[in-house]
Image (tube, rainbow, N blue to C red; front, top):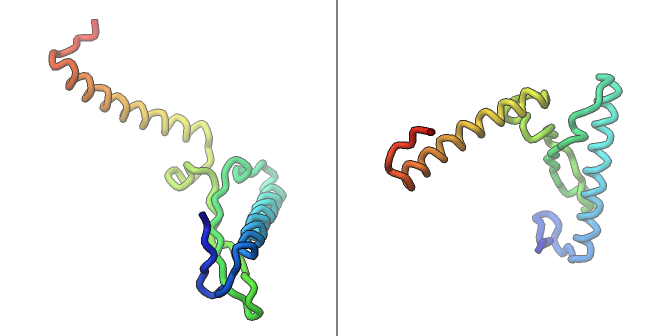
Length: 122
């Protein structure tokens, strides 16, 4: 459950908070669309932000007491923080390789625990 006791917005009612949440969601959607449109127009490529976008949005009180939103950061695709790219094929191969190595080790440990005799694979 969301609470609306935000610092800088004293007396914010639940109803006003719900309206504010809708306003914030619309702000985020509008900004993502604008960023995608600008990127695609500039690069003449389909933006990877259409697949996944994480937007860090700040909130501060304006002089008249209304909330003002601003975009702190936009992160594309969940793997970009690790691989710094959106090359799907390379990322899938890299993740698959890492996952395979990790699962193999885990399976070997479980097998050794459950079957203390050495398995020859035949």
